[in-house]
Image (cartoon, rainbow, N blue to C red):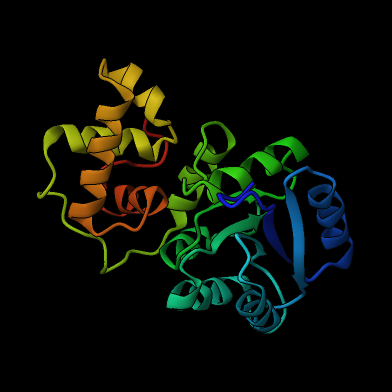
Length: 227
């Protein structure tokens, strides 16, 4: 539910009608959620999002014409759509552009074969303002994509961070939650949250997802790295 008590509004973007139909049935059947629009291509997606101002967008990357990456960038660049959270729907074997999507403003990503309960939980997670970077499958996805990620001249220098902030950033990049990081470092979750927030401010990161991108692009974490 939204702060005003209304349902979480969702827009579905995928060029396959059957996939959108399945997602609509799932979301509309969940108490506290409702689908307010659909699109089969990026241009239509941007128009629908501007019209409906949804809380969450489930965005496919591979679509004819304007793809999900460009659509995500356009949505994120629009100051009137600051409250819209985009979640990328991806296929593990195909989409090597998820880092570009996160750079472009996506709050995170899900594989298309995600369990229904996990997808609904993900919608609530991003609606609450958190990045969708959970352990498990996402951790392996991040590492796999990082292997193919294109170097970015926008990657920040990490010398502005304290040693503890670097350590916390490494664990964020592995997909650990604040509570898990706190347990690992023997500090409180609030202390962890403070370290994450300070790292984001110092690096100019929009959210946790962008911290992960920076961690890989700067070499703070490498694919296959274990804490």
